[in-house]
Amino acid sequence: MMKTKFLFASLLIAGTAIAAQAQGQGYKDGIEYYKVDQLDNAKELLERNLNAASTDKAEAFYYLGQIALHQGDVATAQSYFEKGVAANASNPYNFVGQAAIALKKGMNAKSQLDAARKLSKKDCKLEMEIARAYYDANPTTYAKDIEKCIKNARKWNATDPDSYIFEADTYADKKDWGAAAGNYELAFTNDPNNVEAYVKYANTYFNVNPEMAIARLEELNANKPGIALVQRQLAEKYYSDNQGAKAAEKYGEYINNPNHFAQDEVRYVQLLFFGEKYQQSYDLATSLIGKLAATDSKVFYMRRMQLYNLDQLEQWEKAVQAGEAFFGMAKPADATYEVRDYTDYAKALQNAGMPEEAIVQYDKAIELNPNNTDLIRNLGDSYADASDYLKAAGYYQKLVDNKNNTSQDLFTLSNYYYGVAAADGADAATVSKYLGLAKQYANQVNELVPNNVQIVNQLAKLAKFEEGDTNKGAALGAYKQLLSILDAKDDKSGYDRYYKYAYNYLATYYFTKGDKEEAKEYYEKWLEHDPDNEPLRQYVESLK
Image (cartoon, rainbow, N blue to C red; front, side):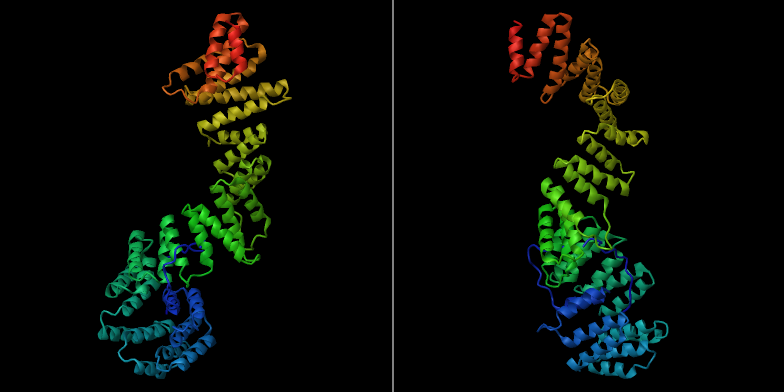
């Protein structure tokens, strides 16, 4: 078997189970993994199923020997091939394994190969295993022997898929992906149930035409639904093609296969998350934490997933607890904290009423990604939640200075500068400076978004604040403009508070001027939008 390098990007995330469908196929799943060059997975399944009643030990020993040989452990390979011969001397493949060792050592392997061929004459599959033994030893030295093996196989059975798979593998080793894919396709056209050809085709062709690669795996899965490798490959291709929901569903089937891998339980938790099945993902992550040893590095990733899922579920108190547990545990040596770790924890803290604690987490996130505008906004808003409007404004000012702002950012910046000016204990210089900035940005956003209720109300609020209790009419124009905008709306529901702001100011202004009739009119209109305000009602009645 050659060390073929396919165009395949395996998932970096790593899945526990839902509805059971597949029953697996014992040690044969390990053989399928071996044939597509996933040696560690193949070894695990072959060893896991070695003593099962249905396992052909001679065949299992052959593939365990081949795995050891490809991993450079010749002594272990030799031991497995000897065990295979002892288990069944009529099985020709372990003699091929012994020949492969001899060929790698530069020795003559004729006696072993003759013994194998005598046990199974004119056997295309055996002949191609012999070709692989020659190829793995030295494809140049044994080029004629390899060519003879291919010719023999085609002469005995021109439609047998193994010779086409072998040739496809040689093209893949040369990075001739088109020729490789063509030969894999020819192989599964001749044998519609050939797992190796389908999977290698999908891995080779995915980056060229993902839709076609996935379609081929779907065909195979429909024909042979119980094969762990096929389920896993199809799920991963769905994920790589941004089909998260399909990936999670297929992985759910795969995880019920007894031949799934422990690391795939972690993978499934994450696939469920990306498939937006947050409660299922959280429950499975929690279950895994309960089963894993506290020192297992997978606990770190599962605690991360608990935090992420709880944030999506908006269960803020539990999310805070999950964040505490996640950041409170020892980080594995090969792990790193992600921006989302900090921002999800910060969001949970913010929504749980702990803005000061949220600020700390947003600060850590910005250290990892200092130019992220969303993080800058989040940190500014967190300072505002903590009533530190000066720092809040500072972060929004950074957006404006770098021209990364929206019109909403200008409005927010005006509001935060107003918060600085209106703070208890602010001296005259502070009020003057920050009220000026609040007005500056309110006017800027008003030019960008004219006749907006919130913006015009902001201008009125700032004018009213600047004149203090004198109520000399500084905000009169803005409030009348606000009423004009509101009155023009077909649907006035939801605007009562703005009507109340405007009528309150106008009524007080005219009353202060001594125009009680005008004042009374505005008091009455105010009451229409504030009918539960009993003191106001009594006051209006006293004016009659």
